[in-house]
Length: 127
Image (cartoon, rainbow, N blue to C red; front, side):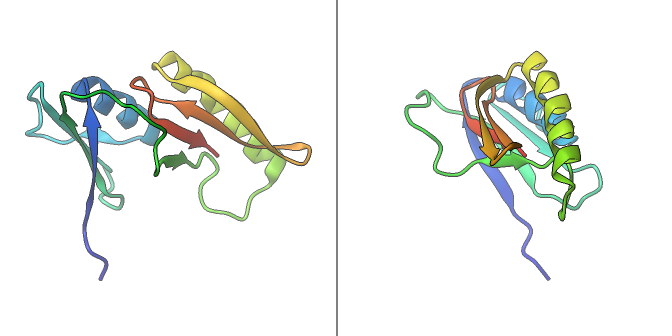
C-alpha cells in the first residue's frame, strides 16, 4: 500500500492560493483549515494527495525546482490534437482565476504544454 502524503507549499496568502489550486485541480477545501495562515485542499474522491498552504514571511525568490502538471487529457496515451484543444480550453479558465501564461512549448507542430504561474508566481504546466 502506498504511503499517504501531503504536498506542503509556502504562501503569502494561503486561502487565495488554496482557492486557485482547488479550481485548477478540481479539489475541495479541507474542513478545519480556515485560519488566515493555513489552508488545505483535498481530492474529493480521496485518491490524490492533500495539498497544504502555510503562510511564510519571505516571498518567492527563484524558479521552482518541482512543479505541478495539470494534465487536462487524463492519463495517456493521447490524441495529441484533442489534447492541444483541451489545453487551449483550460488555460483561459486558469488565467481568469489569477494565473499568468509564461510560454507555450511545442512538440514539433503540436502544442505540448503551456507554462504558467499561479497567483503567487509559482510555475506549473498545463499539459
